[in-house]
Image (cartoon, rainbow over all chains, first blue to last red; front, top):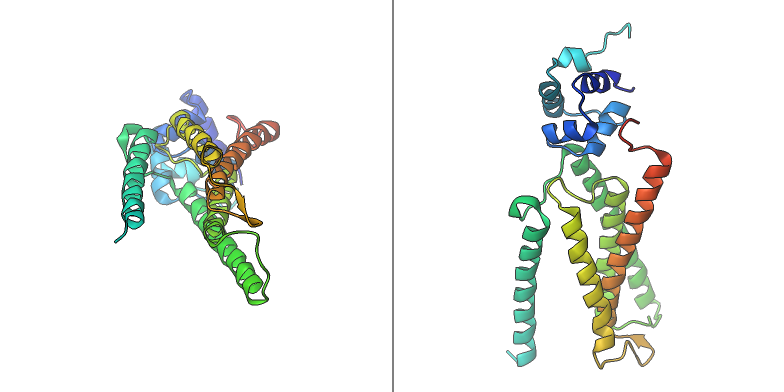
Length: 67
Length: 176
């Protein structure tokens, strides 16, 4: 499932995938894979993404069953 | 220990020193160890598995060929190095197509400078040497250098194809 919340949060901060990748110390392709839902990141990467985007884990990664 | 053995050992030591210097030159911050992120590490594990399987299969084919008495058109040194090359090309190709060939700290421009130099040296060595590439109908040891150069050319060609494939698919583009 695509993670549009990361993309939206990134856009709000005017960050490119490359900027976010550098902030998280991963490759741009990894950020792309997370956003496209092709890869489930580890909790460490989730935290790094949240810190870079000033969001909480719930805001970016929690999925309600109703969703 | 004869002069040839001493020369070989010296060559290996010099080769290792050059490898360390190249790694320091190619990696940002002069690091020797290449860093990969978590997805790259997973993909590289898959690549190593594929490389291991390819090496085993290729070696098994060679073993069968020996057992049934097929005379391979290669000297033993070329046969042994060809096993290494099969493993390397499978690992390199698999990781390249999964965006895991270059680490986070790799300076790709410097990487290609070194690779082009290495390819040019390896391809020119067999022709610069007086030894023939084929002796008694068998590929001889200088052919190993040609294989090294070919390996780099294959990786370069795959990189270019991957670049255009990504562009065409838009799969790895910024806003995909």
